[in-house]
Image (cartoon, rainbow, N blue to C red; front, side, top):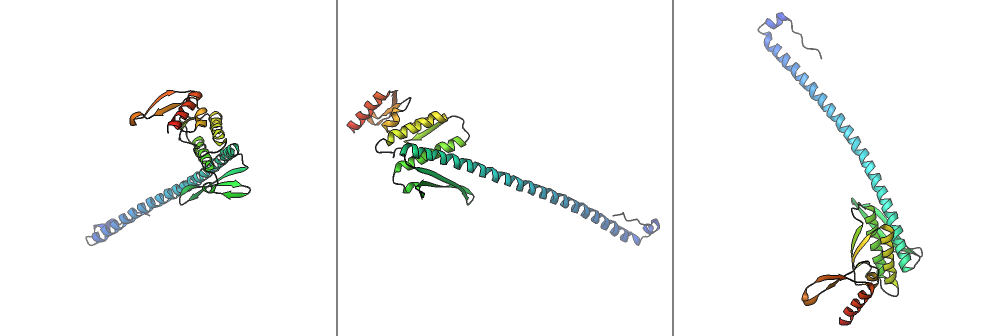
Length: 232
């Protein structure tokens, strides 16, 4: 917009001064409005650019989440199936499906037997639930950021009972420890698990107090366990 040019003779006329002042004020307001519109347009352009960047980042994040979910599902299913077949000696498989519901990642867990899907809590043996829980813990440990290869477990596989199942469960944990390089620190009353340990601490409760003493080899552990069972 061109500046308003006022003839000098007109500007010297006293009656013309108010008109001239109004014209100059109007011109100033127009310039101000033009600047504001220019700033608004720049902001709009910047916001649109940021929105496009956010949308692209969201797509990348969603794809990354899907990739991690797929990897997690495959690892859990593989390890869970290995646990079930190694310990239970059944032709069964673990099927975990990770889905996003209400903004959260949730897992649907099934045991596949003879083409049928059964929820773990509906399975006939509580040991299967323990095996699946162990597989989930180890799988997500392996997927996560690990500072130390150590897992602390409170009475793992305690419902794995009957026949040689406790022995097979202990052997499976020993295999996991060797193959994945995990050090298991466990609290357990299962003799078969204790027999596989490299270091054992026995807790006693004399006079209502508790303390941990000594390391024991397998023979001493078995003697200690039998002594507690006989006295109990």
